[in-house]
Image (cartoon, rainbow, N blue to C red):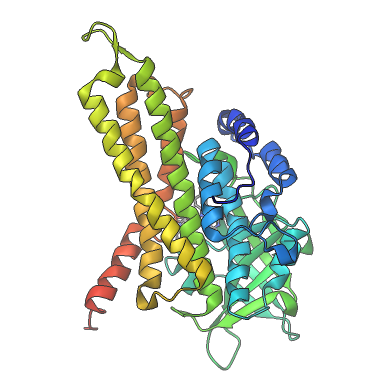
Length: 385
Ligand SMILES: Cc1cc2nc3c(=O)[nH]c(=O)nc-3n(C[C@H](O)[C@H](O)[C@H](O)COP(=O)(O)OP(=O)(O)OC[C@H]3O[C@@H](n4cnc5c(N)ncnc54)[C@H](O)[C@@H]3O)c2cc1C
């Protein structure tokens, strides 16, 4: 039995607030306080560092449950869990350079994921931000990071920029800054179609400093097998897949309840749950979703076990995110179709889930990137010229 930290009571409380945060375009302040009290922000921290020590497979299950209650809350806290997961992956490789993430998370710090930049489709492999060396091993970061979830509340941010000052050519520098360390401006500019409570605002870094002991990598741009980058890939893709799977499961549950009470005049007042077309469509959605759970679970367990999937690791990690988010979108759409016009009203949970699930398309790895990775794995790169 996978271990759980979230009680059904807590999930119900969180679910009851989701519509209000969405309508008011408000951060999930009360949810966060409850999650902190429940020990959820330290659930993924190893026991030896003071956390509950859930595995990645268990954490993915918990994120599915949380997303079923409040997608935006789950998506935003995902960013914190990703950094904790990265530190676990790095530690498992015998490297203690990110242990402070585990210590600080255990002490109550909240980690944001300050990676995305406008128009940067290199994603993890190159940055338009500057990382300027301070001469003592530390760096100051300047640049604009977009979509920073947890904007009102984060206290630490993992970020990266380019150091072009060295004689060894440009390098990506990854480090962790403090919100109270200066050089950080958080804009109040989140007004999106869905995932509204995540408050994924723009963050402007202007000389935000990370001392030497908070600089965790200085690596050449481009693909790498470094455990730190692998850790980002693995934890990000799997936990993101979990969030959108949870959204889809909730949509399916809502649709099942809806068709039991929605009645057909044509069929003498029988519930739509008796209509063969409705039954087929719902079953179809459930069949699609059913395939996601074992895929998420198997790949998460392999990360937990330090298994070697060789050259297929990154394509398979992209694939689990891609399949989960694309499936979730189709499942939510089917749930809406069987539920009828009431789902189109803003007051309907399905209408919110539909807006929320759409965000899955934009996270890396996007559809183009996952297909490119698989095509390269199958066919090799296209020769230049
Ligand atoms: C709900 C949600 C939460 C997210 N949370 C996080 C997070 O916590 N941390 C994180 O790092 N990422 C986060 N992301 C970012 C996400 O993972 C993608 O990186 C993001 O959606 C950008 O995708 P894109 O490349 O398709 O967008 P782009 O096409 O790059 O567009 C993003 C923005 O940049 C502008 N833009 C595009 N090109 C240029 C250009 N050349 N010059 C100037 N402006 C340009 C666009 O107008 C747009 O406003 C989140 C995304 C979503 C939807």
